[in-house]
Length: 66
Image 1 (cartoon, one colour):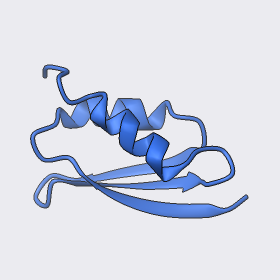
Image 2 (spheres, helix red, strand yellow; image 1 turned 90 degrees about the vertical axis):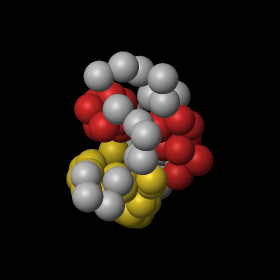
Image 3 (spheres, one colour; image 1 turned 45 degrees about the vertical axis):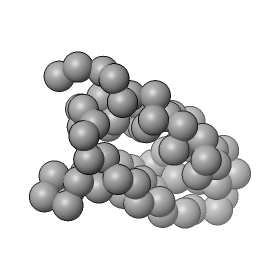
C-alpha cells in the first residue's frame, strides 16, 4: 500500500457531491473539505487509484445541484 495525499480545489462545486463521489472511489481512505479555503484533501492508496482518476471524479460532479 502506498498512501498519498492530494489537495483539490472545490470552488464552485457542490461540496456534498464531491465528498460522496470521492468517498465512493476505490482506494480513498479519507476526504476532508475546508469550506473556507474551498479545497478537498484526499488520502488514498496509490496502488488502487491514481490522482488523475480522482481529479476526473471531482470534475464529474461539477454540474450536480445542491
